[in-house]
Amino acid sequence: HIGTIVNVRSASEHREENWYNEEVTWVRNNGVKYFELPIDRSINRADYFPDETTQKEFLKIMADKTNLPVLLHCSDGRKRVSMLTAVWAVKAQEYTVAEAIELVRSIKERPLTEAENKFITQLAN
Image (cartoon, rainbow, N blue to C red; front, side, top):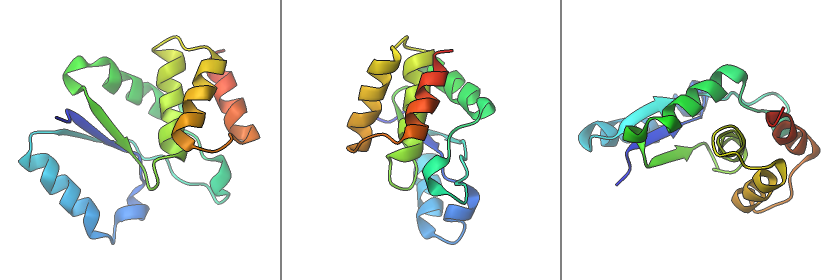
């Protein structure tokens, strides 16, 4: 049973697509909590990351045990989802940078970019 869905897509990504309305209807009909934490894609899709406000809100959602288990999703489930997972791993679960990088690598199923490595490394500071 899913306790909460966290959608990190921006409104512009789903405004004209029916999946969003279907998802919101399903959530309402099944008693699942729903949060929108949009992480906008930049012009250069390779370098978008959750800002400090989004990170704090996500950690707050994850800290509330009544929200668990949480389904986190974006358009392909690799970039934004993996970066928020790194935030949770380092800031809430005390993963080392190396452990968080390995976790993200397993989610993405491909090597991390230099920008992703830098983002995860700065989470530990």
